[in-house]
Length: 60
Image 1: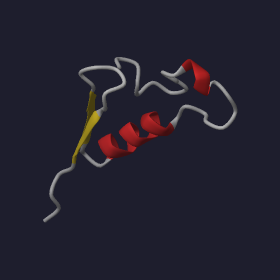
Image 2 (image 1 turned 90 degrees about the horizontal axis):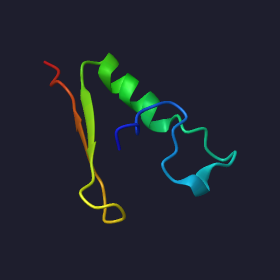
Image 3 (image 1 turned 180 degrees about the vertical axis):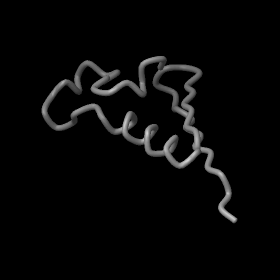
Image 4 (image 1 turned 90 degrees about the vertical axis):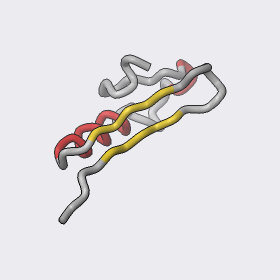
C-alpha cells in the first residue's frame, strides 16, 4: 500500500502485461493535489476491500 501511488507500480504480479501502464493512481493523485485536494487509500485485510478517500476544497 505504501507504493500504490508510485508511477508504474502494479501490486498484483499477474497484471504485468501491456493492458495497463500502472499510471492511473499516480496521475489521479497528481491531478487531485494540483487542485488543492488530497487522496488516501486504506485496506485492513488484503482481499477484503479497499477504502479510497478523496477530499476536495469547496468552491465558493
